[in-house]
Image (cartoon, rainbow, N blue to C red; front, side, top):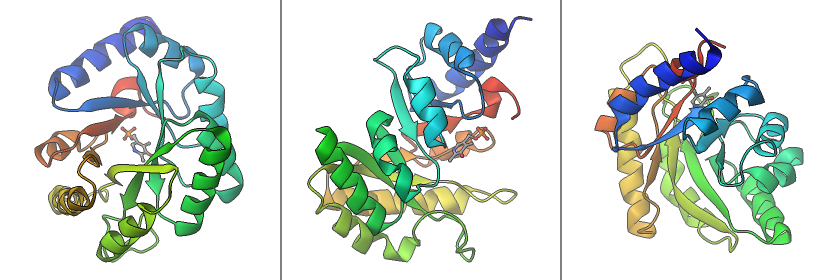
Length: 216
Ligand SMILES: *Cc1c(COP(=O)(O)O)cnc(C)c1O
């Protein structure tokens, strides 16, 4: 089977399951630009990357109408570059990063769309994301930046346990955010292993890599 046929059939299965319930983001991290080109040709427009270098390279190699999602850990010194190519940043969790993203967006003449990442692995504070109990106060701060457009929340459910309580918590925080900013409706949740459950809890954006592109 050609790489194209392989991707096409895996993509069809995922698309069928998601249907029109959410936006599919294909996570292309570690996979080559040639895979992104195949996906683009098959009609995909939303792509997710975790590293600045890879995202900058691939986003420059594909049609302008592609939408790029940065979902990895943010490093201060990479912020200006990330803002230059990412349409959405899913992994905001730090006020000093917010300030730098806001500055970079202003100097690049854009408003940066961002999601706040919430740590869904309560009890493990080494995981990315802000603690859910700090969410409302943090969101309130983020809303003050002129060139950040806060549009929702993102979370990664802990591996190896039932993701139900995690996705329920994320949905609850999303409801709080909608009270503060009615258009901030994005819930970025669900990966290859758990996306059917994320859909049950209102996920609007599903981030899938290995189910479509194979193991990394
Ligand atoms: C890698 C990654 C994904 C995709 O994971 P798969 O299990 O390959 O579907 C989704 N979200 C984040 C934040 C990731 O780092």
